[in-house]
Image (tube, rainbow, N blue to C red; front, side, top):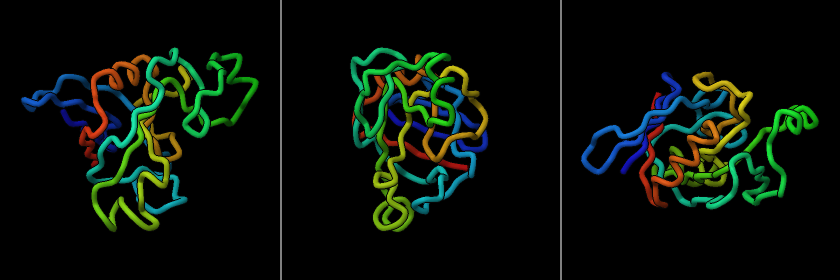
Length: 159
């Protein structure tokens, strides 16, 4: 299996071992566009892999901070009580760059930048770049993807 994220189309495609596309999802990547520099709030490009899978068995809408469940659950009312919060919900697929100098090591290290594929609030649009660098997905869709891909799955992020 492999994942291809297209920043221009704001889409994520999952390909099976035979090369056939088996899932396609609308996503939301960085509002600031593509980029690898730490602190840029941009989505890094290039070859990555899933380094860690976090949240197995958590309910849909479970809130994570620092990759740990808080015991809270996203609802529109809860979100309204916490305006401006960058929601990391349901599941986390933590990405690790595979290209030294481009998205691995130093100030461009995707893992040290905490670049994830993760769930977000139901009020957030997909197909529009609005994140702080991560790849946001609908909760039901990140749960489905999480259940399909193992750690080590290759991820290509391209413009």
